[in-house]
Amino acid sequence: MSYKVKFQQVTKKYKMYNKQIEKVKDLFWNRGKGEYHYALNNISFTVDEGEIVGVIGLNGSGKSTLSNLIAGVTMPNEGTVDIKGSASLIAIGAGLNNKLTGLENIELKGLMMGLTKKQIQEITPKVIEFADIGKFINQPVKTYSSGMKSRLGFAISVNIDPDILVIDEALSVGDQTFTNKCLEKMNEFKENGKTIFFISHSLSQVKSFCTKALWIHYGHVKEYGDINEVADQYGQFLKEYNKMSKEEREQFREKQLNEFSHGLLNNGTSVSEDTGEHSKEKAAESLSLSRSKRIGTKRKSVSGKKSFAKKVLLPAAAVILLGSAGYAVYAAQSASHAAKQTESKTQSSASGTTQAKQQAEKVVINTKTAFVREDPDLESNQKAVLSFGEIYQVLQEKKDPAEDIKWVKLNAGQGKEGWVSSALLTPYTEQQSGLTNKNIDSLDSLVRSKYNISISKLLSPLSETQQNLMGNQALSLTNQYESNDGTLLNYGSVQYVALNNVVTEVSLRNVDEDTEEILSLIKKKPLFINDKEGLYFYQSKNYYIKIYTNIKTNKIKIISFVERDKEEGKQIK
Image 1 (cartoon, rainbow, N blue to C red):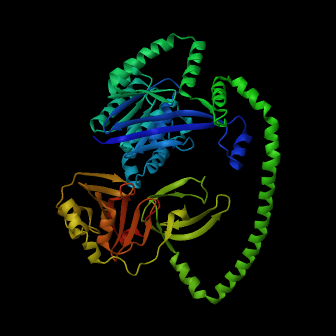
Image 2 (image 1 turned 60 degrees about the vertical axis):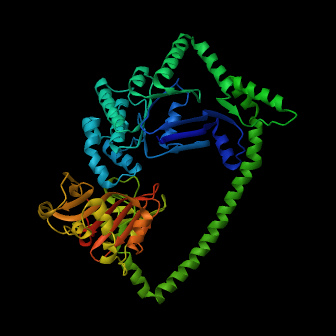
Image 3 (image 1 turned 135 degrees about the vertical axis):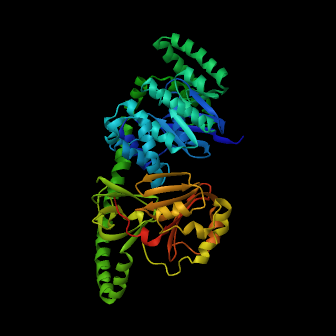
């Protein structure tokens, strides 16, 4: 069985700062010295696909750091974390923006997980139903209780359907009814062969649900293996630990930290051949120092910090100020010179300017999703979300100097307008050498072999009525439902979209073919490419062709054909 998660000698540490000035010092001169907290220290383990791993351990042992590493929230300082597939973290409030409403958070987390606008619209009713928080779904998350945050976070994550699910104490809040609902959903994931990490202090839940246990003890892997063996050992340890007094627990913790060379470590101690033993003794001594002693030591070095500030920070600040002043003068002169050149060019090339203006009259969305706002401001309310490949008319452009963002006001007809960041748009120009019917027909063998339909029959329902599609389609209709984009009709992995009873788009889903091979069949260059998101946009006389790829596997996920006159001038709802 192939592994799904693999940790190899992974270390995660955090530098400890007592004062803000120490962070500033690190910006100018990071010598690596200082105190570090090692949340995880040189851990290694492998989890196979389909395993359900219960992560157990005392508070402060590194369980949440482990979950953040698996979910990609943070990165290791040393070692490698190999994750095969998408991972979603479920923790109280994890990934939720307190300023946004519950509904907006569903959209936000869906976008963060790489879902398309349509996919988010599909899962939203399921998330709302599962979370069951009533009218609070339209209220800011900052007004939620911890139980409501957990409900929403769990509902979003399970409906996104990740390959790896990481549950960090998410079931420790809320009522028993919701806990049972969550356990049922987790069992469903278990039956589907998903890999799950279940972080909990409830040994009974861990033993009843998991197949393996990972015992994290002060940043190290204490035990990893059969659920019953490891859980029983940990249960016995807890009995002994709970008998200890507060002072005994603190002594035990200090002893464990010393044994593991873990906790607050001073990386500034030098070790040479002559003084190696002395340095080791000093390092061991520093581990056993109480917080008060460490603070006392810090106070003794205040004069050194002041000296550093005088010798390094003040000269550096002076250099920055002088450089800024010099650059300002240079920029002003350059701007004046550029303005004169621009004026001259404008007078001598009016026809060229007119042509550029015509080219910028329309733009195409160059990312999977783009937020439309009421005003040209990041804090402005969101009016809608636009999808990749949609084409809109440009009304106005405006620069926000504070955020360094250029905003574009779009017009979608019928008085519908809104502002979108120019970074999410590409100027649309008519491609003279677009795809021909021959280029499109080159996909016929792929379509026939994977979807049991010819490319001509696949595209023929476009611009026809929904009734004609349903009456003449040779494929079997699997499901049909309404969305903001219109009526979605699924014939297996072939999806048609009907808007106002007219079929406007057809998509081949789950293509799962090598990107380069398919693009070589088409032969022509796309109108534009978004390398970061794996998006390709083509145009032909009759269609816009949108290709969505998985950049990790370099395979195509979706090929979508949209009738040209239907895609232009879509409404901003």
